[in-house]
Image (cartoon, rainbow, N blue to C red; front, side, top):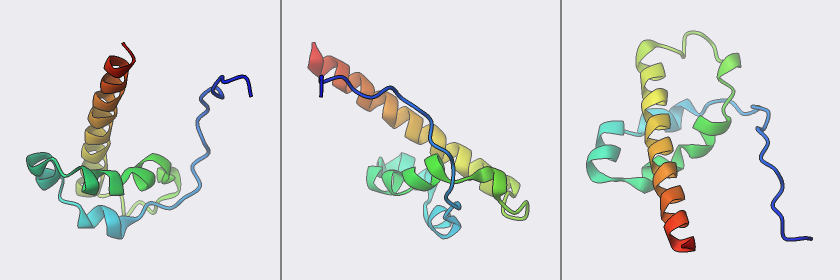
Length: 90
């Protein structure tokens, strides 16, 4: 290879959301205790779960709020990691 990375492309969402996993994570505790292991355990299902095929009964206000809060924490952590990598390059 020429050392260049492949361009970024969004992947098709094919997986079902893992509700058992999502229900097992306490977002307040993740934030309070900086529990990155718990946060990382939900990355795959939040990033690649196909929310468009979910049964509407699963998308309650509380479940939707939880997914959004987890996604916010994941994005915040991703931004932190990205910033850390930029500083290591300099």
